[in-house]
Image (tube, rainbow, N blue to C red; front, side):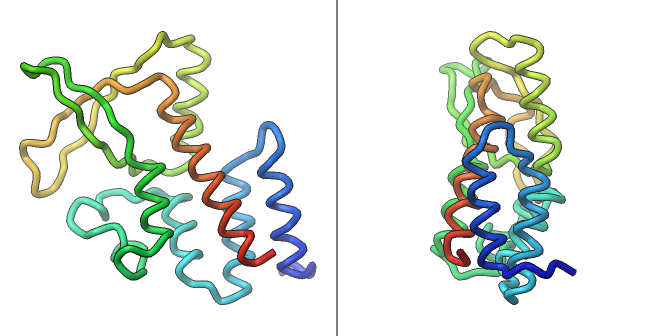
Length: 168
C-alpha cells in the first residue's frame, strides 16, 4: 500500500509523463492506484480499460456508458479523440475514409508503435480489423498514417496528465 500523499505522487507522475521514454503502461497502473485511493471509480475504470483493452465493449454500447460517465463528459470526449483515428480504404471507389476506434490494451499499442518504428515504415501502414458486432458492413482493413499508434499513446499520455492535475 503506497504511503506517500496521493497529491505528491500525482505531481511526481505528471513530471514523469513529461519526460522522454515514459512507460505508458506503468504510468497508467500508477495513476490507477492514485485514483483508487481517492475513490475516483470512474477514472479507475477508465485506466483499467486502457490497461486491459476495450475489447468488444464499444461495439454495442456507447463509450460514455462503457466508462460509466455521463454523455458528453470530457473524459469520454478525450478517450474518443485519441482512440479514434481516421484511415482510408483505397479498394472502394471512390476511396473512402473510416474513423476507427482502437480497442487494444496500451501494451499492445506500444508494441505496435515500436514494430512500426523498427520496420521503418513509410508514410502509412495497412491494418486489419476483427468483426464489428452489429456492423457486418464494417471494413476489415484500412490504411493509416505510420504514426497512428504514437498518436494514440501521446493522446492517452496528455489525457492522463490532465486528469492527474485534478489530484495534484
